[in-house]
Each structure stands twice: as C-alpha cells, then as structure tokens.
Image 1 (cartoon, rainbow, N blue to C red):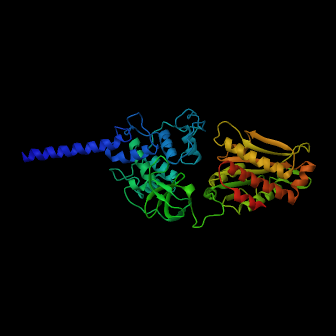
Image 2: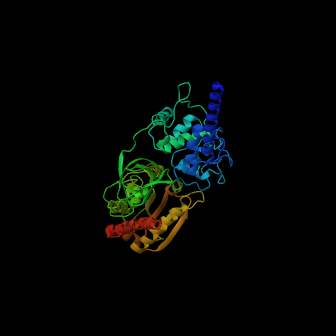
Image 3: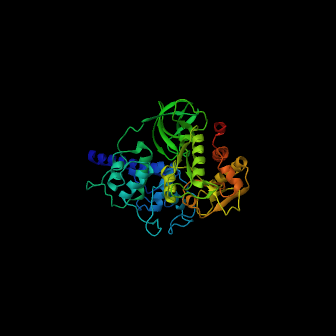
Length: 466
C-alpha cells in the first residue's frame, strides 16, 4: 500500500504540475505551448509582438518563415508595419508582413535574393535566426553565422544542440524563435546573467513608468522620479532597459537624457536626430555655371553655413562632402543610410538657358515610399523659408520620381534649388555672401519648422541663427 500511495502521489504531483503549466499558457490563449516556452511566448503575446497561428494555437511546432520572423522582429523594435508596396516582386502590399519586411530591409536586418525576391515563405534556420537577431539588436558578429551564433550563446540567448554544434542548418520552429526573441529583449529569460548596465542616464520627468517590456502594452513595474539617475543597458527600438535602486525594466528613451544637467532645449529626442546635408556636384562635376560662378561652389558654401548653425544645437549633422570633391550619387545615399540619417537635404542651383528664375524644392512622390508625407512636409517648410529669405519667384514644391538622391533614400528627403545660376537676377544673390547666409538660415529654419510640425520642441533653437 505504501508503494501504491507513493505512485499515486507522484501522479498527482505531475497532474498538478501540468495544470499549472496549462494555466500559464492559457493566459495567452494558446493551448499548444510547452512549459519550456510558455513564459517567453506569454511575454511576447502580452506585448503584442507575437500572435498565434489560430485563435487558440501558437503554432509552436511549425517552422517559422522569413515573413513571420520579420513581423516578430518588426513588432519588437516598433518598426513601421503599415501594409504597403515593397521592393520585392514576391511581397505584395496586401501581405500581413509587407510593412515589417520593408522596414526591416531598410534597417538592414534582412536582405533580399536575386531577381528582386524576398522569399517570404522560406523557412528560417537557426543560423539565419542568429544573424537576424544579431542585426536587430546591434550585436557585433563579424558578418558570419559562427559569429552570430557566438553573439547569442555568449549572452545566454541560445545554446548548442545535442551534437555539440549550434545546429546552424537546422530549421527553426515558431516556439523556439519566440524563446530566442524574448531572451534578446528581456535578460530575465536568459540562460546566463550578464551585466549590461554600463551607461548612466537620468529621467527627464517624474512619475515615469518602468515597464516589464518595450511598449505601453506591458504593465508598469514601478516609477522613476524626475532627475533620478539610472543605469542603462541595451535598447529595443525606442525603449531602454534600465535599472534603478528600486526597479529594473524598460523606459521610453524620449524620457531619458545622457547628461545630469538638462540641455537648453526641453526635448531630449533632438540629440538622437541626424541631419544629412548634401551639397550637390563637386570636384570634376562643377554643376551649372553662370556669370563667373559654379554651382558646386555656391552650394558647398551654403551647406557649410547651414552646418555651422546646427553645430549650436543638439542635432547631429553630417555632410556628404565638406570640400571640393566628387561624390557619386549612390555614395551620397549610402552615406546617409550608413550614418542613420533622419533627414536628408540636398542643396543645388538651377539653370535653364538664362530664361527661367526662382526658387523651388523637390521631394520624391512615388506611391511606394513610406517617407512621402514626411518628405513633402520637409520640402514645404524649406520652400516657405527660402522664399522669405531670398525674395525670388516662387516655383513651388514639386513632386518628382526621377531625382536619384531622393528616389533612393530611406528617410525624409528634399532637394532645394536655391535659384537659377544662369539668370542675372538670381545670380546676383547666389554670388553674394549676404544672400548665401540668408539661404543657409532659410534651410536651417525650414528643417526646424519640419521638426516642430512633427511634434518636437525646437522653439529655443530659432534664436541660434539670429
């Protein structure tokens, strides 16, 4: 009887354990998630990062596809998931993942295949997952599968398989992908503990929620007071993983600053914005000319003046060229992308057989760009300021589908034509130091106007150009 009672006790314990596991999984509404993945799947479901393959199943044992992986990672990083036309012939605008796929490709987390294909239904291997996660979370991995595998195993995000290798060629199931992604987001799930809290930051506001995950969908774990010092680790999209004396969790980066003393502007987001200034032509390419001056010289001088104005602000500003050098068009857009630009402004001067005059600004208006509205807004703001400053004919804000540096950019982008260098009246202003200063201030103000329209606090920065 004692032996039988012992067996009954063990069975009851197992049943209770299974009930406990089932109730944990049921919190996310899924009935097919094993205990080893339950906490991680629930975590992603709570943050609306992962969803099921049906109303009641997660599809744990189904192999994850490239489209699903892009959607999971895109939601985790808060990328633009709006369904839209993509660069790929096999991803239509109606695809559930089209927005996330294009956004992830723009961020260089994913890439396509020959023939303009993305292969959204292609099954993902463990090695490919390691590369995706390494790119998404900015892990240094040397561009190799083995490097990516090491980046994940060293952080306790993944481990090897039974044969002692990483199993890079093995196909990956949805449940396992969810586990790896949850561990990358939140170190609480990792197999080993590493101290990532190497940066000091301060809270800009009081009563600031510290959440269990990187979105407002996650519950608050505690609060920070205004100016409270915290230790910061990694970022997940716009959220920072922090630790205070009382609580550890995620805070939106908008509400944190890098300096103990608040900057002159009340908007800390500006220090995270990069403006790319692109003086057209240069070197062997002189651009248009007229009355003894060259377009390449006029636009370089004007752009350098704009740069000087922005040096007094929290913005980061990068120039595609700062000297009289020739830059290929493709290198200009690559420079903007590699420097994580948020705004791109190309500066030019016009010419048309001495028969045209005035100021105009262009933006790329093809239907398949996610930046059309922002680019148009930027162009409009710059055009208004240039008209006031230069007092030339208004040739308007124009939509284009051909200008390379606009068409091939991945950010809000505008091209400003200051005036016609081969028209006598416009030329007088383009060759004048006074009017080039005026043009520089106009571009500076126009960019500030754009940010103000986007909800940024830039009021204190207008004084910098006076």
